Image 1 (tube, one colour):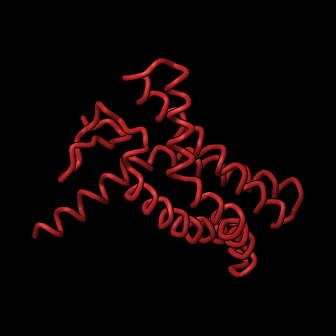
Image 2 (spheres, one colour; image 1 turned 45 degrees about the vertical axis):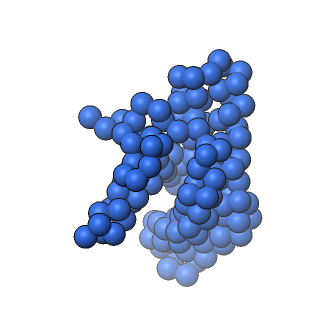
Length: 169
């Protein structure tokens, strides 16, 4: 029972931390891919734009959250530097693998293999996200002490470090 409870709490911790970023990244990703495809008719161009828009949307949310959390204990300049370090450590390895290999291939092959733009983009996104989060969660768990976290959120089970990205009400 304890293992199941700890697993559940870990999953909730990751969802709270990454969901706001995922929402902004997904909106930018799918919007950019759709607009580029409608403009050019090219799945290759749509795949590249989806990859760029996903990163911009995702990291905008991650950066704003990290600066906001760091501002509770640091001045503006230091908070920004800590946010940059946090994003590089937590997401850097995953982003390189995701942006250069997994996401463009998934966004290109999804629509081509399914024959459906909507289903293909969604399938491509799911495949790419699985690879991205597998790498990101490893970095998060291994290098947590270097990351900016929400000091006002709920504390996770088994640790004295708060990690919530979404306020618990």
